[in-house]
Length: 141
Image (cartoon, rainbow, N blue to C red):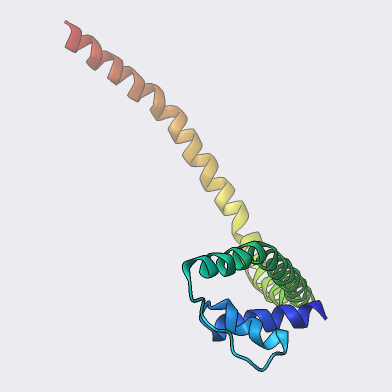
């Protein structure tokens, strides 16, 4: 029942472009349309009533909307985990199985190449360091 009332209030707010009085007219069940206030004091009274009711109504609407979004989020999450994620996992397993063979074949060659490059770097680093130090000494002299 609360959800229905919340939806009707939202519909009234949307249809009336933010004017709350016409939507309250239908809820009251009277046949007279609301009249605009004739004096500034009446407008202040009506505005005060609306402003007092508005935060509570908006809070309830927000809580209902939040519950609906949480339910929708859970449904999307369940759908994702039940149908879409297993499909992606299946594709990922196929990719890994096809590339896995290639990786296993190339792994020893890659390790060997990495070790060779590491040895070359170990040999070159002291030479570069000495030459930089020698250059620094020359600059100082």
